[in-house]
Image (cartoon, rainbow, N blue to C red):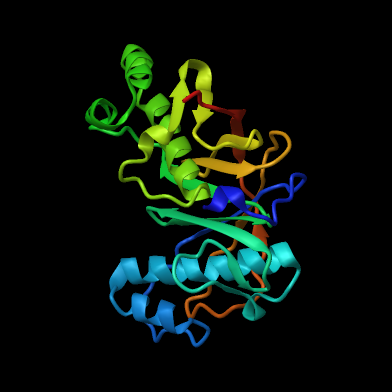
Length: 252
């Protein structure tokens, strides 16, 4: 599992790189895609295809800027992009929604990222009733706030990515209590979480570190229309910190 990485670096600060999706007609797939990525991209068309290409472009930008290498020399591992293949040593987490992609990087340590638009979740009560713990249900129904639900949801999503698990059967492995006291099922005592608003989205990062830290957040210019791996320039972006927490170990 991701939480038992032997390369854990307790002093690393997470970074988050974002870019808006490029609009335009369908294009030939860029040459830098791996065979796995090319096969996956061929299953999509239209906006979904450009979203996929934008996210893979961003992954290489994120690795390159984190490792101080040219993006065309960087590549994630095959399959789920949870680590860098070239250069090695970086852990990754990817999220994208409604035209914005985000990639979190951390040197040698597990990391998970979730990005959600700040819009009311019309069916959030049904999600809480079916999948959340009784403790979570009690305080979330009492607060009756879709924004509060969304913060809890992104914490759970980021936690599952950081610990290398899917949603099915695992949403209650992280319990979020009132005032965002957080309890997880991992044995380590150094799991951290940070949550903020940026560009009209809620962004949450979960990672292992010795203390809570705000991630370094950078919005990059959108990909070129042909997705050339030029070194992307940063753009001005406003982000609002919400909360940081240490994730405590949940009692059996």
